[in-house]
Image (cartoon, rainbow, N blue to C red; front, side):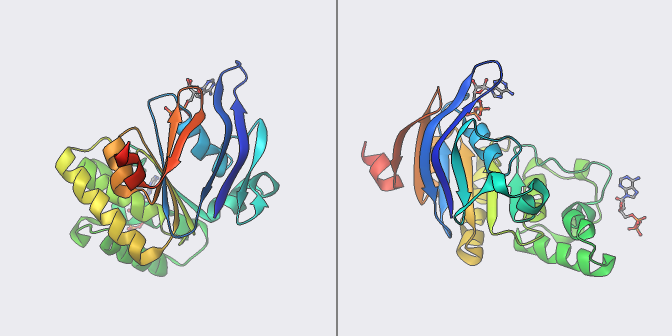
Length: 227
Ligand code: ADP
Ligand code: ADP
């Protein structure tokens, strides 16, 4: 479980990106942060894995303040997926997914076999494992990005607009796939999007943010629809 407890982020130039945000992202649920560009969604995610730290307030991961954990240790338990997949262009798909197992010192064979299992899990044709990222479609690359984020079996998955750059039909199938995966894996997922329909489809709970970084509403998707 992730807890935001009165979290504020003020950048050095004075911009308040997140303003006294308090919310909980329970284990086994998808918590969606939704709102227009600039409302502090990415800033909120980056504070969870300590790419940046809050100016005030605390973020707790299973009760422990994340700023008391050194970033490499913290990030071992947190998978991160971004909009443009962020794959290493000069590495084959299988090696992209095996990056973290290699770093953890697994032997090559075991790491690659783990990678192949993950590619299957995210629904990517295993025949693509030997290709390079530029040889895959955007949707396929996103699947690889998800597989790579899951490689060390982290309890937490942070997803920053992961499906925004793909066309609507592929997006819908990636969303369905994520729901299926989550039913199987039971992660703590924080999912960022500017698309309210996506938020309602994926979220067990939805936090609506306003520009200025304030929480406007925290609700179950059905309650949001009722508004
Ligand atoms: P979102 O992900 O919702 O689009 P961001 O978290 O990226 O929002 O940004 C929130 C606000 O903080 C915006 O006003 C943005 O311009 C500002 N911001 C983001 N990063 C920085 C930075 N490094 N320095 C100053 N302001 C920033
Ligand atoms: P293989 O037997 O699969 O070629 P290698 O150890 O030669 O094993 O390379 C493993 C993978 O690492 C390759 O598939 C390639 O994509 C990637 N790779 C090799 N060299 C580099 C490099 N200099 N920079 C980035 N990736 C590399």
